[in-house]
Image 1 (cartoon, one colour):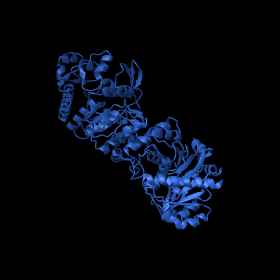
Image 2 (cartoon, chains in turn orange, brown):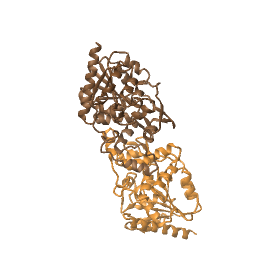
Image 3 (tube, rainbow over the protein chains, first blue to last red):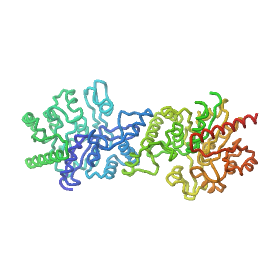
Image 4 (cartoon, each protein chain N blue to C red):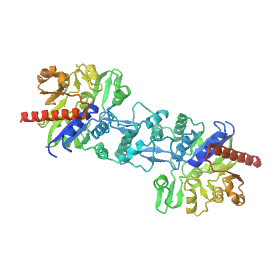
Length: 317
Length: 317
């Protein structure tokens, strides 16, 4: 496949842009590298929240209200499990549960998480390659004022309420062979860092052994989209975490975090006052409307991001 | 608890009589020893079909149409699993699935199947003690003209179509401590063999190491209810299997199978022509209406069975 594009993504925000990229690009051109730092075993099942959000979003099966899980979901299992004294803090819908049980069966049969994801994606009709960042467990752990927490304990059970003091990534895990191949491909034209939470969703990917150097080894534009609009995150605790880690919740701080990695940053027009400060870091800025509600929003933003990447590529020649 | 009663049961037919016995006896008087020869792992989950049928029937949660599973069940999980390429021959409803996942979690925590069943029973409000026959796996295997089959492969996947040539029980497994205590109790007044399939559901219990001798060691009436009415089984393949194993499908053959174990047999009035032949085996017969449709049917039959046992006990003194 000529002219491939790789996107780095966590859950909701990243999936929205991935859907836009999928709409703009040809089938097969897009590969999405997905955070698995949130993965965990729950009720004995292997749960990959961000991978599933990608798969569901790219097939229009996602629940548009929650951002996670499936639309038209039912909750009979969960209600009965509660009645039986089971843990109910992590909600698993009846249909969604099939994904986790099927994943368990396929993993037990000896397939890698990458192979399992390919099979589940194929069954659901995903046209984009969804690549778990690693076939090795690489759990993210959250240091908080209430102690060290497993990711989902912090994120779901405690609803991101504890104050974050630091984040520990599994730096010993290697990218999967498929991820490595995507990054090493001569056809790769651009790497898009989607507006997922940089600390919780993108950094686990960047922290994998050799990942950053695989990106930087060659000259291909890396373009990020800032998840912050006018001092707030569209969804989730990004702004809260930035403040807890001593940052201003704005696109300049996002640019600083990605300095040395990205060749350009897309920020919302509302943040144009920060453009000069970001460009002073040596990072070209493109203004856009980064709020993605409709499919049109996503497609338009994706097109602008790809155009920005193409412009950066042209200017680098 | 004074004057306890033990019932041996498989799934549907046994559960019906157990419900009747529960209605007649005081809370705590009844203990049901349940076949686990049908138990298997499916989709990575520990499934105990007969135990669950008992629990669901005794709490009026059972599906009256199928005899297995829960009433008002939904099937979102199963439909999605099929879509994902998962095995769908063994149907697991959304609510029922909670039972299996919860059982898995509790077993993994180190509890025995007996303890897990007690906990699940308590959560669902079962007032009767439901005792899995063994805490050790004791799978029943079916020899057929199509080869040796795992129980659920024969019974559900192939819908009991293959011709049975023999049945292999796990005779090395021991009764659970709770089952042994129930059998050894001085308070035990009667043992009721419910009209579950003698070969598929009762024989696995009787085949446990030391089970038969525990029953026969003391003088307490053992009363069975024939599952055959007018040459046919109420439900399931009992009559078919009897023919395949070279027997006439009638209550006389049931009596012959239980000879040496039981002190009395309850048969349907429609089978009264066989009464003399059964009594010639040394087994007293009580005629009754053994078809159990309504709760009244079950309660009446249970009362008659207990009365029969009391009469046998009195006549033995």
